[in-house]
Image (cartoon, rainbow, N blue to C red):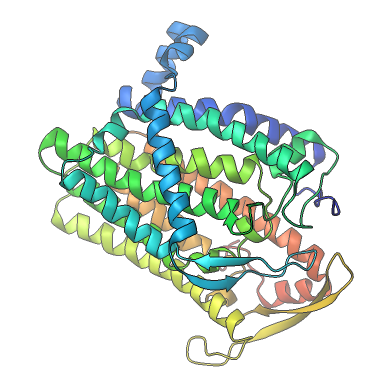
Amino acid sequence: MAAAPETKTVHSPALTYFSMLSLLSLCPPFVILLWYTMVHADGSVVQTRNYLKQHGLQGFIDIWPRPTAIAWKIIFVYGAFEAALQLLLPGKRVEGPVSPTGNRPVYKANGMAAYFVTLVTYISLWWFEIFNPTVVYDHLGEIYSALIFGSLIFCVFLYIKGHVAPSSTDSGSSGNLIIDFYWGMELYPRIGKNFDIKVFTNCRFGMMSWAVLAVTYCIKQYELNGKVSDSMLVNTTLMLVYVTKFFWWEAGYWNTMDIAHDRAGFYICWGCLVWVPSVYTSPGMYLVNHPVNLGMQLALYILVAGILCIYINYDCDRQRQEFRRTNGKCKIWGKAPSKIEATYTTTSGETKTSLLLTAGWWGLARHFHYVPEILAAFFWTVPALFNHFLPYFYVVFLTILLFDRAKRDDDRCRSKYGKYWKLYCNKVPYKIIPGIY
């Protein structure tokens, strides 16, 4: 087996272990509490707290739905459908970045086609009365419960696979079971030669479920009220625009931390299989039973602001992708981009060169693209207005996640590029928010 994964941590070892154990133990019950509060407690954290205060642990056990046959069936059919699309749909051959051990993964870029086929199929099944998506909403608690347990078993499979049958030399054990299970054993786990597990969990199951559930919530509200509120339309439209942007740019996503640096463990895979379908979609889940009439003018303002933020987020990624594709020989904002040429050494001892972009959006701050992403999340949540805090949990969580990711990415790049990273930070001094942070 190859060298062990990096075990350097951003925080102190004690805080790191505490964080990992807390997330492993608290995330699953939180998903159930989030669903229960949104669907059965009027979106009120206070109402759920009073219920738990009155009924205690037994009350929590009582509200935890048991996985049912229909929940497992929905998950299996959806997962098998997405896996088949990933394998069978045609797509352009795309190479990922060179890994720390010198490997270069190869992908088939058919995400946009899979996204189109999925939504057309799902909406057609409803339109022609073959399958009613409200069934998904009505069994949502059972589906989340099944996903929680099923995904934990899947993460155990990934842990064992990393030990006994790794797919590449980008794998290994840290010697600590908790770290290996949480952060993962393999960087690029595959089943066979062509089925990439992280592409499936992150993109085709997780991100695709975001779009599917956004449509589901819209249809459920329509069937409950005979119409769809403008608040739900703004929420659904913005989330679908964001997910469409993601699949349009999917090949670029394969160069990000999630795929190129974070290994396949609980953090990434359980998060994409459970956390994304529940937490990321939660503003729409809330709006199903809480339609808000924004009025045409306010709805349009929110919609335009959200689309603008999504576009800026996309343009940030497009600039960096074009810069990498042309090896810096392109124009950004109408002129040749400034850059820093940085050398680094792989774990195999090979010396390589990277170009660090210091122009365009990337000249404003090292992780400026997180600003429009957080704002976009705010704009597809704000149609819920401010009667309850819980719809905004995703915005708060995303902010914490991206600020932590910026720190992890900076620490990784500092270790990788050394003096060149220091030079880069001098050229682009702000981490996320220009002029502030």
